Length: 358
Image 1: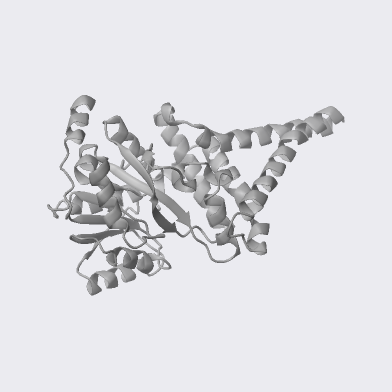
Image 2 (image 1 turned 180 degrees about the vertical axis):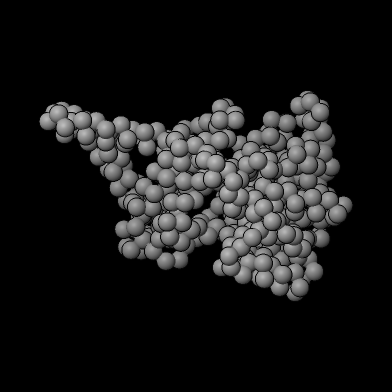
């Protein structure tokens, strides 16, 4: 099917009725800490229609599978599927495939094991899909943390200096969007573009939204849709997350250079500039050249100053960060920037490509 034909199909995809079924899909792995709260936030929605939660569970090192099984035993609206690969894309596709059994569910809504939906979220998504004619709608990711590092990570992820000024991170006006966070989608549209790309283990959401837009579909951002997200709790976990995300973002750009943007290229540019500065400073020390040493110090000092200014701005926004978390914030920001950038520069490794961790 050509792009023109596909665009026509999307424009005439089934309408979203006022009372319709919704299938909520999730792919989880090692989510013992947060899974039950995430599921409860779905099951307690006041949506005026049928609602099913389909959870694809990957191989875990904790009690995730047991918790999911208990949730399914306690509530017949919960369906648990085995996702032996652990891949997020494959797991989400398994859940979407299962949704085909719910013929009166024209809406697919995605959640993660780290998230909690506010009351009325599902109802609001359905209303927006119907009112805007969009194939996908989404809102703001609101990171919430407890403890020193997690609080700092949450603040960094909601500040432009953390992971960019995308509307789903920092908010904005309602309107058309390039991508949506998690997202509620017309099932027909997702199926027509082939679902999530099973060869992508990160950035799969951006890729799906890109294909929906290129097929002629409208994506809609609305800041009234706010989802709580629980970020990583240690610097090591943050470093691993952003290292792998950077590698997979490089893979997405390799496949389609048009997806490269300032938000994605800034961290690798910083890493390369810092690397060249270290080399220049080293040469200056070896050759006893004060000019080269001073030149090599310009970029690192500028970067450190920028991080400190961003820290002051982020930490003093209301509500103010506790002092302990504010002191951790520079390390968190630098970890995000440099690990993302280094992963991007390194590119996808064979090990990372073989590691399907969700």
